[in-house]
Structure formats: structure tokens, C-alpha cells
Image 1 (cartoon, rainbow, N blue to C red):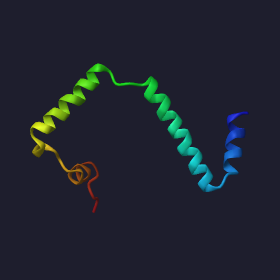
Image 2: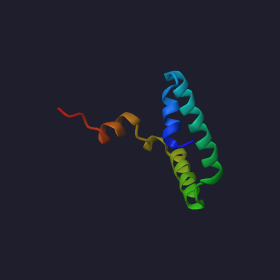
Image 3: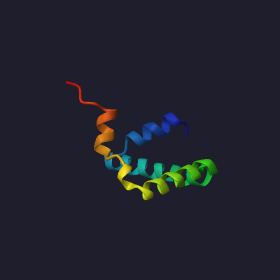
Amino acid sequence: MSTSAIKTECMKLSVSERIQLVEDIWDSIATEASDTIGLSQAQKDELHRRVAEHRADPSTAVPWEQVRSRLFPVKS
């Protein structure tokens, strides 16, 4: 069955059925990806370093609200 035919058939599903289908597909991708796509040792080391740094001084953390306001300033 072609991709176009699959899409046509999927569009015949109800909204709740399509949402469930998307969730099922996403779960299958996540499962496959976790088996095949991993972090490099350098990435793992960096994550561990950052966690250790945060645990040593949690006061250096920036609240999400501050980060969000810097990234997405409110336009007047």
C-alpha cells in the first residue's frame, strides 16, 4: 500500500482513533530509536558533569520562567 493510500485510510478514522494511531507510531519510533540512537560517551560525560555541577550548587539554576522570558520576550 502506498503512503498516499495509507494517509487516505487514516483520514477515515475518527479524531480519537487518529490520536491513538499517532501515539502508537510515536511509541514505536521511540522504542526503535532508543535501541539504535544513543548518546556518545562525551555526551554522557557532559550530562554527568552538569548534574554534578548543579548538585554542588543548586542556587545557580535559572527558573524556567526567566529562561522563557529571555528566549521569548513579550512584544509591546
